[in-house]
Structures are given as C-alpha cells and as structure tokens.
Image (cartoon, rainbow, N blue to C red; front, side, top):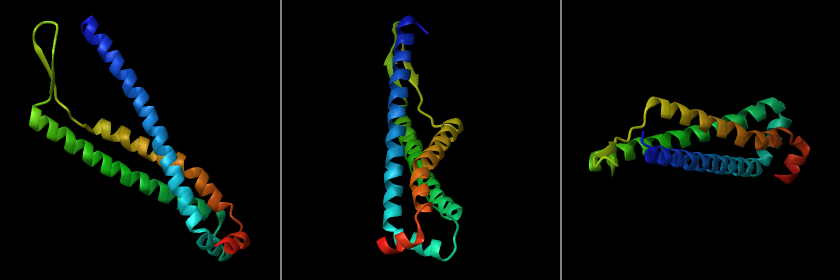
Length: 151
C-alpha cells in the first residue's frame, strides 16, 4: 500500500472500531432494557412458577435462553440484510471504486463471508448473554410471595 492508502486504511479501521464498540454497547443496553421489561411484565408468572417449585436456576436459564433467542433472531435479520445489500451494491455498481495515485481505478467487491457471519454470530450471542444476565438474575431472585403480590 502507498503512504496515502495506508493512512486512509488506518483511519477507516479506527472509525470502524469506534462505531462497532458503540453499536455493541447500544445493542447490549437495548437487550438489557428489553429483558427488564419482559421480567416486569411477567412478575406474576415468575411468582407462580416459583410457588409451583421451579428453581431459581430454571428461571434464570429460561430468561437467558429468551435473551439468546432474541439475539439470534437479530443476527439472522442483520445477516440477511447485510448479504442482500452487499449483493445489491455489487450488482448495481460492480463494487465500490476510487481513483488511485497512479491514475488507475481501484475496485472493491463487497462480500459477506462465512468468517464475517461467524464473528457477527459470536457478538450477537455475547450481547444476548451479557445483556440478559442481570435481568434474568433479577427474575430468578424474585420471592414468590412478593412477585404474586406485585403481579
């Protein structure tokens, strides 16, 4: 890479890292809020399950599973949109091109590969676990009598 191209590459990597970290934190907070709302809406149900003898671990596991399924659905939708947009841009424009210092044109083909999808799946599952753990813990720690009174 030329000096100018290297500088642009480094700038793009830093912008992508900051955007990615911001997006991940935003998604994690969104997952946390969603699961807290689910716990709040189902306090009576949680109290009933605890009164029937379901363990704290079973309730924690069920809310974590719900969080993981929600994150998985988000991954499927996001991956589908990303693959479709990459294919549409490549079909419409033949890729993304820019002029180089040598009076040539560089073209990049947009592709979403298996490695990209694997990394996105791991991030989605991490968001599901991290964003869902504390609301699930709150649900698991509800006392049956208090939950039934509130519900």
